[in-house]
Image (cartoon, rainbow, N blue to C red; front, side, top):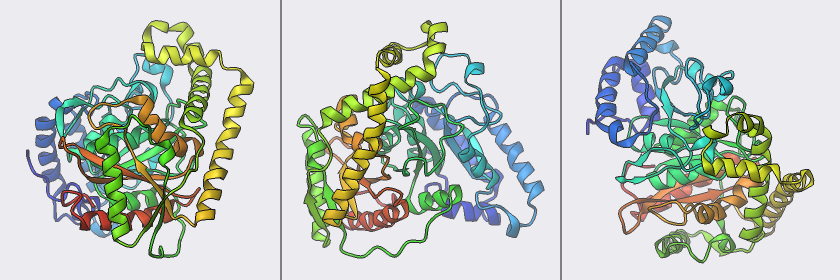
Length: 440
């Protein structure tokens, strides 16, 4: 593989490109060689003719606009990846579907616009499951190319994990960005609901849709979050951390290696002085699954009903069945499901207050090699339905050699506090040699 200096460290790479210490054209030449060596097996990106000719032209235009390095924008010439559910000017949006792109066209997503105005370049659109729901992405795991990822945001996570980009935008309704990040060994952050606008993103279920950020290290992700939205000043996190474990949501059928990994992680955090306690908090997984499916189906049917009626042959079976189910969900049931989001959020918030918790910790996925949607959703649903912010950190490798992440969840709109806690947890995990060096 062709090495790109500092490719996983967005902050260092951005500084080098702005100053000219790492010439942009040299970087693009190396990136193109890496792309050509990696992408044919990875399938992280949608095909694009003359991708790197476009990037060189856009980089040249940046140089003409910002001759003085002192006045260059923060993301000067940084190529970033964008999930194909986001509208991007100059690119078609298919959202992993077979629909005519003209049906899906729309103005550029504000998150993309902000990164472009900060000097970022679009490396390309990344592969995703159909409308962020179906397991139809063609992407493979960079850690084992024989293993398909298939899920939504798969291409975004694989692009970061392979070193093709230090930053990607993904989406999350069922937990896609977090699940893909865990399987690829990268960091993902799902901010609180609507902390980052989903405007300009093809919706699946607007009541649950979130934007997701994926990066190679936590400092880079925090920096990008600050470029995308005004950040709040928060007091430094006090030690020791108080952490809750929602064992009620961990299915009995979860892979033993995942359960053992969670237990080992909790023991490590206790050894570092953290209080880690098991707390029964959310409703049963069965109730949450029913709630989520009713709401997603109803809202997906509202959005896609007319398109499906006109073009049923262009929808995959899995998504077609979701639309048909949604058309049968009574309006009162959907309204009850939306109201239940606030009830769940309040219950989790009250529990955190009662036990003075800084965060929750739980495994991200139910298995390491193949996605079991129902079990994975049971792990993700409390945090997606409630809209609380969640952060995925790489936490080593399980017995089969594939990465494993842990998920931390914070308080409603306590995103900055969660990111600070994530820094401390990452330090503790790295100290105990859970990970290969360089992820944090």
